[in-house]
Image (cartoon, rainbow, N blue to C red; front, side):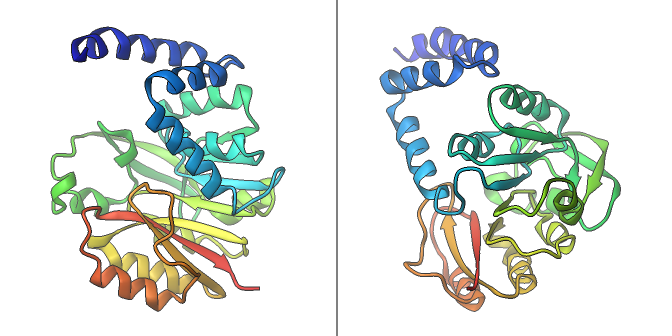
Length: 264
């Protein structure tokens, strides 16, 4: 069965996904496949929809900063949001453009930072680790789970700011930021208030997360561990409690996302 999965099922699945991803047939085909062969993936998708659905309503504008291949953009669009998927990696943008053919997703092929211009994007063999942060490239060598990261090359890409994106598309209800160590610079280019924001953190770079929260004045916070769409705290808490939690955390996942909710 393992050989069948590795040499027949998996390659066929990849080819079908590539062929169908931009068409209206993709969603029913994916749902049918997961319902039979991968119920865990179907369950996770359902949990993610339930979790992220609390941050916006149908028709709301959402920014997906560091969209990668669009896993979150797809969830947001399926929930009825108008999604601005921002991603500097050209290969990931090819997938995002396919998604935009069947969903309310607009692709912005650029990085996001504290100023407009150009910047070097360091490409990893694992696209989710690609970054414009020199510090992040060096940091991966110190993190056991990332120490074998294979860096390929770097390319020059355009960079913009959250403020410029908001001028172009409108003020988003929710901003998701996943930029591998460049979160502080992204938030430096933000002057508007969204109802909700989230940004990735790493336990070994908790100082960056703390500084990011300090920039978000007028917000309460919560956190998820790894990719599990479930809050650690039962209520929204001040930033200091999140910093204290990171300092005492001893779990097996060394990353997650911090969520910010604008105070009423």
